[in-house]
Amino acid sequence: MNSECFPISAVPGLSRIFLDYCSGQLGVRAWYGAAPRDRNWQQTQHAQSEAHREELAQLLAVQNPQATAAIDRIRQGVPVVVTGQQVGLFGGPAFTPYKAATAIALAREATDAGHAHLPIFWLASEDHDFAEVNHVTFPARRELTKLSYEAAPSSAVPVGSVVLDESITPLIDQAWELLGYSDAMESLAAAYRPGQTLAGAFAEFYGKVFAAQGLLVLDASGREAHRLGAPVLRAAIERADELHAALLERNKEMVAAGYHAQVAVADRGSLLFLLDEQTGARVALRRTAASVSEPGGSWQAGWQNYSTEELLGILESAPERISPSALLRPVFQDQILPTSAYIGGPAEIAYFAQSAVLYERILGRLTPVLPRLSATLVEPSIGELLDRHELTAEAVFQHTEQTLAQQLAARAMPVTGKRRLAAAGNALDEELTRLTEYMGSLDEGLGQSAGVSASKMRYQMNRLRRMVANFQLQKEASLGRHAQALAHALYPHGGLQERLIGAGYFLARYGDGLIERLVAEAADQCPGHRIIRL
Image (cartoon, rainbow, N blue to C red; front, side, top):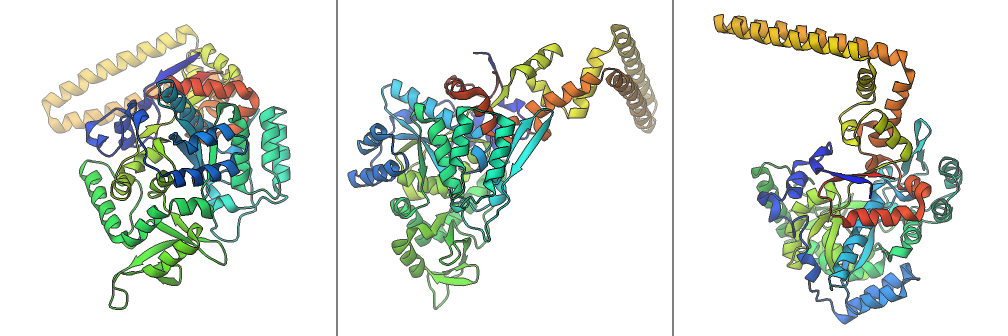
């Protein structure tokens, strides 16, 4: 395959705890169920009852009606490799199918090793930050076009429940214009239709795109799923103070080890949200101190107060109204599913160090969390530009569009000019170093002043380099266009392609072959970031 594997440290903007996890640092290993390339999870044994497996199978069968063989294997107790993502417009960002591909690759690997597994994609449909998921960005010639669904809900309801209205139609029309005809675009248009929920559209799209790979999708926001996960929600109610104290203690451990808490733990916070019975809004539940009237403490959701018994009553009669927080969600997920390994991105893996204490106290075990495929896709035209200018994609990560253009101009400069600039710069640097060292030997203060003056001279030398590069850039206008194309394609708006460019763009342009390519790349176990030429 035409791809390269770079160290994960080549990727800008990653948290230190994630980098240390990826490098196998002993200091963080205890907070995770496995090292990144550990495969002991394949032999995990699960103790779910036959009744639980049957309820789970029925739930999955409703949402995956074509996957009868896989559902039967769930009934038989076959464990799963799980990943998930917030449901978003038109399939969300490019890393979404990377997660699915990684889950598929690892489930296949375990099965081939004699430990049958199935891949499942968990729809994070209960999150309520609509602004995070209502848009997608697609490349369009020399620009990046952002499509936004503006029909926001009136309150902070779970995003998965948002029903798409007629304003989705012109966005689909724009997507057709940007992406052209393809099977993936047909699936996108069919899924994101008026009257469909955002979760339903997301599930339908990925269910079709990954149908051949056997990916199951699960929206666990309904009553049946919450009833299966109720033991975790009950523990979060009945043992709220204990779990809160355990999280605070873990935060102290992380700070003492030189990290910071990835998810803030508020003084009166809890691990739960309550869905308002009238509006459907998802409201954070806050704890209040124990009192004579409420010796077990009470709960507050907005202006409404609840006793612990009242919350337990809601959990019993309408469990779908109790929603887990980001830290509790993976524990809730693994109460429902027979999970052997969870596939996460950098942020999820970072805050898993906190979720680990909840796993240990509620489930008595810790699900291994493993990194998803991290990749930058290089289209043929962009690959040609990289080759022409003798650049790597990794080098593009180090530049803004402007500085990249200057570098291209500097490379295009005539050899005579390059040599003269290099000779002048080297001579200046050598003489200034000798001079400042000599002046410093005479007097410390004099040496410091000399250093300041020398830095100004070096700045002026760099200014000369930029002046020549800018002249070359004006002379060859194509260099600016090349820099723009490279930056937009590989490092758009100063961030990784996989976080900004919509998955639909690549799926529409490169079809079914891209899916198997991603699965193969994920199976290759690159411990860092992949540059994949299409």
